[in-house]
View 1 (cartoon, rainbow, N blue to C red):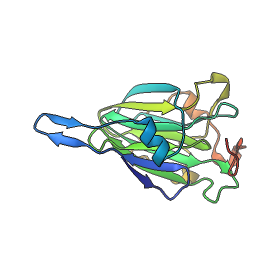
View 2 (view 1 turned 90 degrees about the vertical axis):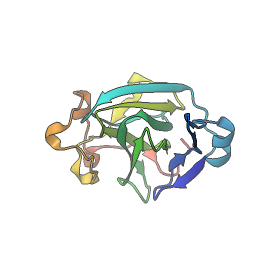
View 3 (view 1 turned 45 degrees about the vertical axis):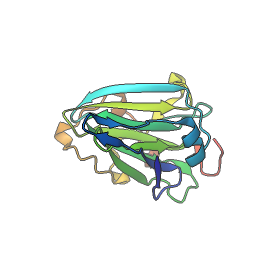
View 4 (view 1 turned 120 degrees about the horizontal axis):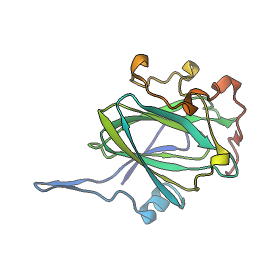
Amino acid sequence: MQVIKTPIEGLLIIEPRVFLDARGYFFESFSQREFDEKVGPVRFVQDNESMSSYGVMRGLHFQRPPFTQSKLVRCVKGAVLDVAVDIRKGSPTYGQHVAVELTEDNHRQFFISKGFAHGFSVLSETAVFQYKCDEFYHPEADDGISILDESLGIDWRIPTDKAILSEKDTKHLLLKDFETPFTFNDNI
């Protein structure tokens, strides 16, 4: 696997080595040994999958301490624009984001460390999205910032009149009104 650094520390793009032939393709989607060696020691404890239609926007989600999560995300069918926003107080990149197109064809994965809010928009007719988490889901720690916060400067590549959001995702605070539980230098 190839690890590609992004402009924000804690966010990495991972490209697997894909073997193609007349039968199709094969690639190793995850190796704990290689991940530990190239990214760092992260113990994933839960795998999740969602299926969504074009225009669905999910996020920007995170879990508050002590139940913070790192995630390794990928799109196994269709295409999504995946986004992580730095919400670590004191970070030189606070409020900035990285957006990565994840598709069934490019096989890219996006590693999102603790201290980031995460979301995605569905660019294809449907998309199947999978992600690994290093902490179990805790509803009492579930939180987010507004996916519609224009101050973040995210181009979700979905026309506003086509965007489909859950009721929960329409109620998150804007970043300017949000008190972050994360600090840049914490080893969360």
